[in-house]
Structures are given as structure tokens and as C-alpha cells.
Image 1 (tube, chains in turn blue, red):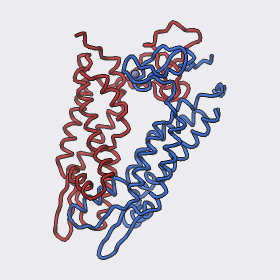
Image 2 (cartoon, chains in turn green, yellow; image 1 turned 60 degrees about the vertical axis):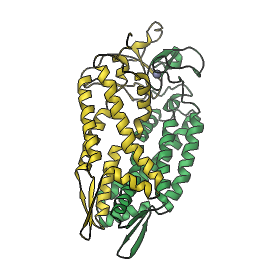
Image 3 (spheres, rainbow over the protein chains, first blue to last red; image 1 turned 90 degrees about the vertical axis):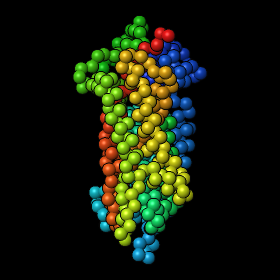
Image 4 (cartoon, each protein chain N blue to C red; image 1 turned 45 degrees about the vertical axis):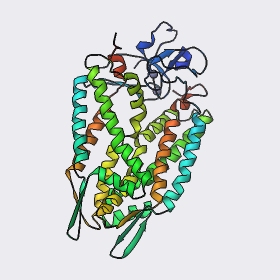
Length: 210
Length: 212
Ligand SMILES: [Zn+2]
Ligand SMILES: [Zn+2]
């Protein structure tokens, strides 16, 4: 037994919902309920690899049309202008405010890409039971959880703009299908990171690295 | 936080903490003011010192409720074009999205901006009201579990930033004036961030089931 015992080694199981520590010797704990909150007890989130992969791939498939298709149409003085996520960022940079353009760029492009890369890396490395940079990978997962939902920014922007403008019957701004794909991308990646179990990072071979 | 030494089989589960992120078992110890217990293996936060008393928390939640109601009642922006002026509340905006064939976006917006924050504020208030006297409110278990699952889906802070970006963008085409509603949302975002940092799991330890 290592100096930092894991729950399974001590015959314990922690409730994923309320944190209650329960005595439980063998097996995966499937079918048992937490005595305190009633949630199902698991050693690991069920079918973590399969679910995370499935959601991540679905999210990626949505992410392609989200970037290729325009998300918003603006019309002013006879000019019709369809913007994709990227061209919207450029427009904001040129005409509006560069600092907001950077924020939107991070939320809509950098954060989703980071999520795909991070979750993909975590899935592959955990599947192989790799002991490489475990602490850093654990931090990476916490970062993904922390910033993931900021990607919703562009969806709110398009929604707010169209709705506000529609309100005045000006009909100058219209949402285009890209934004629906983008919204789905964000929701699916959020589900994907929830389905991933960070405990898997520390499973596998004995960790002699620290 | 100390790790459990080898061969300690007689420790009772209530003195232990299991890291949510890596399943390492730690012995619980009392924390000094402002202290944060971190996992020795993965560095995740295990437990924070309860800086706020239940009464303080309850006051915060009530403040959040008041601000939330204000944020929904006041218009968030006024648009002007060719002398016309239109002010819209958030609810108007969501209804407009629904009518305007962007139902998917309308549902996402309504859920993350209305339903989830309101559900969170109300259930937190309900739980704390009873927790003041160390009791568990009716429905305590179910509410605590629901709040655990609801957590990631409240996005008021993202919305406030989104509103800021929209105002700058809309400024390219017409006059936009931010209205009080958006400031109330900003205040709400601040309050929600405040109690997002609060470890609600403490309510499990600090309350007892009613004897009746
Ligand atoms: Zn539980
Ligand atoms: Zn840990």
C-alpha cells in the first residue's frame, strides 16, 4: 500500500454527489445507493470512456458546421453581411473593440479547441494507463471544467442581438444555422467533460512518480 | 491535509475525506480561517474553511433573490434607430427568440439565465432557512442532489459578458443604451460567484434529520 491510499485499497467508497465516505469492501459498488443522499454509488463514473468519446466526437462533428456556416446575418443600408464565428471576431476587432474581440476569440475558438485536445489527450493517456504528468493532467481537467462553459458567449451574443433588433421590427440582424451548431457543440462538450472521470488519471500502474 | 498512515483500519468514515478527483483518502482536520485543504496527490481542493456563517449565507441568498427579480423586471437595453426607441427586458428577448424560430437558442437561454439560477437561489434559500437551526428542510436530500447536478448550468456571468459584446456590436448599427437590468445582472453575477465558492457539502454535516 502506498503512503497515499486510494479509497478502494481501504475498502471505502466515496459518494460522487455528496462526498459521504462509505465502507464497502469488494467490487465496483454497482447497484448500491449512498446512505446519505440516495445517489447510486460508483467507484468510477459508469462507462466513462465510451460516453466521453461519443459526446466528444458528436461535439466535434457539430463544431465543423458551427465554424463553416455563418452564424449571423446583419443588414444595414442595403449591405447584407453574413458572419461566421471567425469573421465576427475580425469585425469586432476592426470596427469595435480589440479587447472584446480577444475575449470572443478565446471563448469561441480557443476554449472549444482546448477542450477537444485536452479531453482527447486525457482519454488516450488514461486508456493506456500512462503515468506521464499525472498531476498536470489532473490540473488540465480542472481547467477544462472551469472555463468550458464560457464558450456559450457567442451564442448569447447572437441571441441577444437578433432578439433585441427583432424587437424593434428593424429586421437588421438574423441568426443563421451556424449558431445552433455552435450551441450544440458547447452543450455536448460540457456533457463530455462531465462524463469523464478524473480518477482514471490515477488508475493503472502504481504511481511511483511522486 | 494528512494522508492516512498505513494499517489504520479502525478509523471511522466520518473523520475521512475522499478526494473527488482522484479517490485518495485523507484524514479530516480542522482548518484555520481562510485555510484550504488540498489533495496531496492531485492538488484538488478538498475542503475550505467555512468563512461564512449560515446566517450570512442566507442574507446573501436573499440579496441575490432581490437582485434577480430586479434584473428580470428592468429592461436590459434600449435600442434607438431613426428616432424610435425600444426597451426590452430579458423575458421579452427570450420570447422574441422563441417566436423568431430560434427555439433551440431560446430554450438554452431560458434554462441557463432564468430557470437554473432561480431554482438555485430558491432551493439554497429554503435549505439555509432550516439549516440555521441545524435542521434539514423537507426535501433536503433531493434538493442537495439536484443542486449538485444543476451546478455547471448556471451561466449568468457568461451572459453579462455576452450582453456587453452585443452592445458594442449593436453600436455599429444603431444607438444602444444599457439599462438598469444589465447592471442588476452584473450584480447577480457577482453574488452568484460569491456563493459558488461556498462548499455546500457542509450542510450535510451541519444539519440533522428531524426527530419527528
Ligand atoms: Zn451521497
Ligand atoms: Zn486528489
